[in-house]
Length: 119
Image 1 (cartoon, one colour):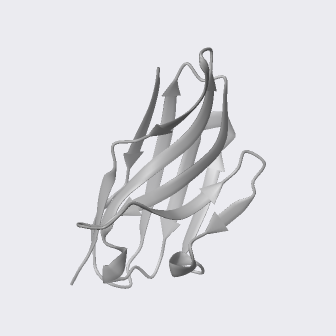
Image 2 (cartoon, one colour; image 1 turned 30 degrees about the horizontal axis):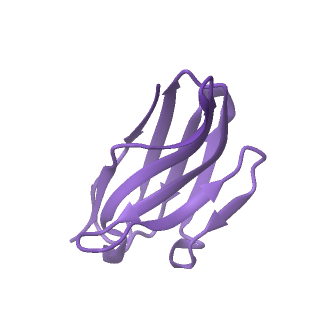
């Protein structure tokens, strides 16, 4: 059993910053890629940023230059530093990880953390 827990969401004014964290726990042999996704009300869940276990990084065009993804392999943790936030960044942010366990390699999701950008 693997659990992903996000934290760090909240209400912030436009132009502000937040730092999201994702902590993985459980029977983990190895974590491969990790990523952040977001889902606004009435919309599909979209990719935001991803990072492999070797440090290769990708961003959605809408967040390039504003968001920074990082991970700490020793802690099985991932982070998303979000700067210059805009109202259109408002969404529930989800952590995703591809994890190898004793039963095999699976994709896991966290429960999500709400980010609201509003004045």
